[in-house]
Amino acid sequence: MLVAVVMYTQHHPTHLWDTHQMMQGCILVTCFLVNLGIRLYLTPVLIKLITVKIAIEREAGLGQEVGSNKPGLLSHCPHYMRLYCAFRKTHMIIAIGNMVSMAATSLHLYYLATKLCSVQL
Image 1 (cartoon, one colour):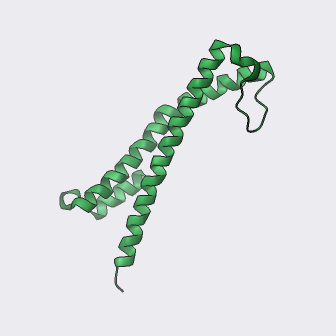
Image 2 (cartoon, rainbow, N blue to C red):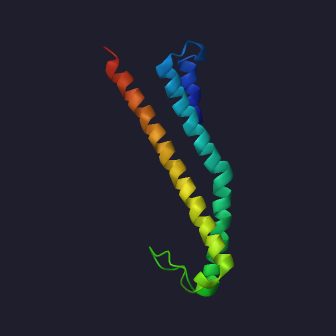
Image 3 (cartoon, rainbow, N blue to C red):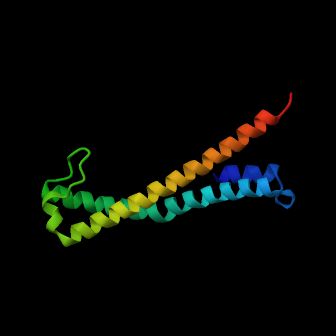
C-alpha cells in the first residue's frame, strides 16, 4: 500500500488535488495506516497470545479439534479464559482491519478501472 500511495502522489501532485483525488488519496493512506497498525502493533500481540494459548491447551490435552472453539476443561481456569478472550478480541480487531483494508483496496481498484474505461484510444 505504501507503493500505491507513493505512486498515486507522484502521478497526482497533492497541490493539484480536487475533491475526488483527495478522497482517493485519503482512502489509500487510510488503507496503508490500517495495515501498518496491524503489522506493527497487533500481530506481535496476537502471536504471543497464540503461543501461550497453544502451550496451555497442549498441557491440558486440548486444542487439536478442528473448527471447535470450546475451551472444555479450561473454561474453569480464570487465567486461560482471560487469555482466550484477549486472543479472540485481538483476532477480531485484526479481521476487521483486514476487511477495511480490502474494502479500501477494492475502492482503489474501482477508481483505476473507471479511469481506464474513460481513456479514449
